[in-house]
Image (tube, rainbow over all chains, first blue to last red; front, top):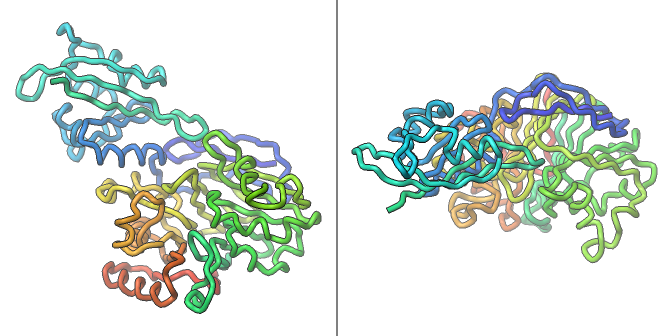
Amino acid sequence: MIVRAKLNHFGHTAGTMESLNLDFPLLPYTFVTNPIRMATQELELILSRQLAECLKQAMFLTDTAGNLVYYNEGAEEILGQKFSDTGPMPVEVWATLFKPLTLEGVPMPPEDLPLVCTLQSQNPHHGSFSIRSLNGELYTLTVTAIPLHGRGNRFLGAMALFWKET
Amino acid sequence: MEIRIYGTRGSYAVSGDTASRYGGNTACVVISEGNDVLVLDGGTGILRIPPELFKRSHKITILLTHLHLDHIQGLGFFKPMYNPAYDIHILGPAGYNTTLKDRLIRYFSPPLFPVHFRDLPSRIQLHEIGHDTFALGPFRIHSNFICHQGPTLAFRVAVGNKSVAYFPDHEPVLVSDIWEAGKEWISGMDVAEGADILIHDAQYTSAEYEKRQGWGHCSQSDALRFAAMADVKKLLLFHHDPDHTDERLEEMLAEVKKEMNVSFPVELASERDIYSLD
């Protein structure tokens, strides 16, 4: 019998064991308490960040809880913050940083943002809203948010790509 | 724990005088602790493993990092596969939409190979692994997906407080700025960190790598940088490019050691190498 420890996306044992019930008489697997010295992001997030680093257009990358684990230089303009200054941010912080408005000028609740919708539904969402730039100018952003489903159909988070409408 | 290197070459096997020092067989490493044995990858190097290593138990455990041909080609000619007395357990990654078995069958079927997988007489069991932590006898194993072409695993094998990390094919960063992002954003860092021995891809010079970015391999200098960040105690450069002669490999090593002043020993993995960790 194989007993395998499943890991959560931070690389730690999640506290559950899966019995695969396979005949493996040579060297039976046994549960191992976490021997991992450190956690790394999932490979799919690592590769997404490397893509974001290469893109001029703004890109957000979140984990499953909505924590903004990375935003690129293009996105720094939208947030008015630098990633090197803020580091990762929880959804309650980043979703209110840029005070989105509907196209009719009504304040938009964070839960209506396409990226937040994607995190909740694990489906793609697309939409437009207005924000005010750092110099006070109102402009329209269009966003496509895509869920990240990794190997084994694990939901790992989401990415959002932004277009500034001119 | 003993580590024996049976195949060091990347991409395809080579022969002749210019590969006699570091070897021409493709990836295969054997880790043993007492009578317990793990085979890492089934490149042509697997054919060099002395049969007596398995004769006692007639049971073999093979961990595959991925299914590129240079990591499985030896399996088709590995004699225990044709011996009904053997129990063979193969652990490796599934595809995105295909099972490990389906992926192996692509090799074990005509016209690529004359023998169908189903006709192999040994008792073979396949086990799909991914981002996992498990134990096999005395070995504690941590596996995780790393940056390479297709689903590819790296392994950390530990016995007691000693460990070896195996990254035969790895491109740690695709964008150089990522080195500054911290360990959390470097592929495979959780597998490698603090290992007593890191066996790592180092196929190219920095100049060669510039023309091969995204191919899933790395330069010797990136291997050293990864090892330094992982704080390993020893680095074995692995997956030697088939176009690099023994002499060229030594020149490359001398150049990279001069370029990067690291605090741990760095060696070229050789098919004759045996390392003990006690």
